[in-house]
Length: 181
Image 1 (cartoon, rainbow, N blue to C red):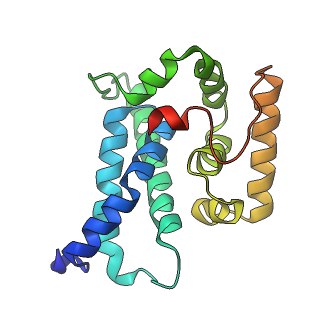
Image 2 (image 1 turned 45 degrees about the vertical axis):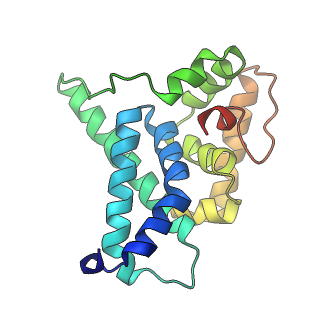
C-alpha cells in the first residue's frame, strides 16, 4: 500500500468509514448492484492512488463522493453507448439491495419518482437526502455553484411533488435509506 501513497492503516480506515455510503450513492445512481460494487472498488483504488496529492485540510467525504459521482456518470455513459450499439449492459444476477427496497410498497412510488428525475437532479437528491450532505458539500462534490445546486434541488422537489406522492422530503434521508443500510 505504501507504494500507492497511503499507509495500509489509513487505507483500511478510509474504506471502513466511507465504503457503505460510497456504495449506496453508486447504487442509487446506477441502479445496479454489480455496477455499484465496481464503482466502489474503483473509487477506493483511485483514492489510494491519489491520496498523496489529497489536501488533508479539506474533508475527505466530498472528495470521495465526487469520485463516486464521476465514476457513476462514466459508467452510465458507457452503458448508454452499449445499449445504443445493441449490447446489453451487464446486470448483477443476485437480487440487489435496490430490488429489496422496491418490494416495499411505500418506497416504490417514491423510488419511481426519483428515477424519473434527470441525472443532474437525481445526483443532488441522492447526495442531499441519502448521503445527508449539506448543500455546500453537494455543490462542491458536483463541481457546481451553490445557487445552481439549490436550483436543482428545488426543481427536483417540485418535479417529485408534481408526481402526487404524499411523502414529504425531510432531512436527513429518503425513506429508502434505512432499508439500504
